[in-house]
Image 1 (tube, rainbow, N blue to C red):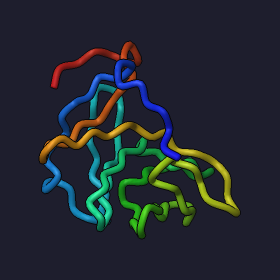
Image 2 (image 1 turned 60 degrees about the vertical axis):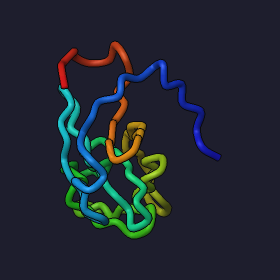
Image 3 (image 1 turned 30 degrees about the vertical axis):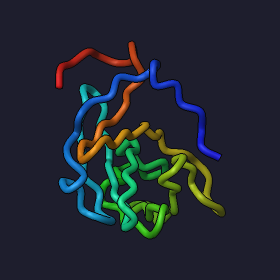
Image 4 (image 1 turned 45 degrees about the vertical axis):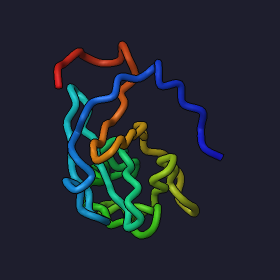
Length: 121
């Protein structure tokens, strides 16, 4: 079941075109104070997660490898769901996710309104 998303709570920012993202490889996008790791799966789904490892050693996740809808964290060797950011068993934790809207070829990522600093595209 997909989470209910009230799009009125988000401002969506253009981060590129679908073709700008390489399948199974992460790309870092900065929106204001947010550093976001964006991934495209082999079935053309695009996911956006906070570029921060939930593991005890910290680090980033953009260098992770994608298999299906699972990200393999390069620092902790943990598996993270791209759908909801949940770390898969036997480990625990979660990565913040961001809503992605694809319209035509344009990819936009949503940030909660009134959260963080204001900036222009």
